[in-house]
Image (tube, rainbow, N blue to C red; front, top):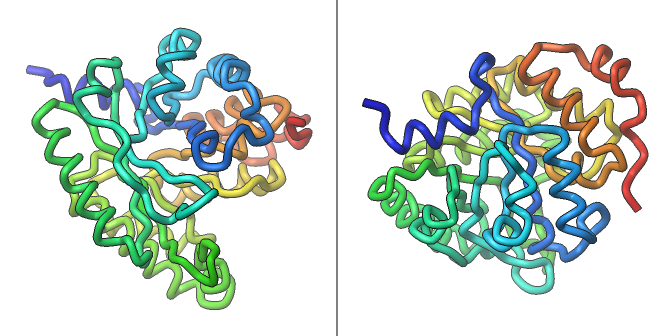
Length: 281
């Protein structure tokens, strides 16, 4: 018998490739109405036109704009913070039961590993995982290496540049934390090196890993991250700013989907969709 959990989780992955393209739009909570998200309704409409497998957002987006998403899966983020205060400290802002009533296919919680608030966030995620099991709800754990440094976020960029093996080790630990907590999907950072990222995938196995997009980069760079991640064993990508900050959001989703689901090369994707570098104003 197919469970509610299995049916919901299945809606997030392509039936043929078994991979997923997720577009997070939760940056509106974190940073405000930034470039590309000034109008939530317009962003959601354009993203729906690109037909990703799922969107990741807070409940208000689905309540106000969800009808436009059609068959696109709904992942409700249950933890939040803003850039105005303690961005590294995620707090619970919703419940599994409320997400279920809303019609969600999955819920998400965020953990910043090495933050002074790490233990608090792990505890929150553990309680959400328990509620997910009780309610047949899939659970995505977003888990990054991130700490506080001189009042700013430290995303270990220097470690990634200077000590790629050490950065890979930290990201692998992040992935294992998500798996150990009972995640059905782990979202984490690409290490920048396929060999070290394979260790990340192994650390989470058998839980599928999807890769975050991070800050806006050129379309060729973003597509390269997607391609290398998939080739190294990722089961999908979760690109927000590198989708909604572009003028041609739907085209960017199509290019990413070609790589993730169809095995297209970066060169083929750029040739098919050549105007991806114009950014939203």
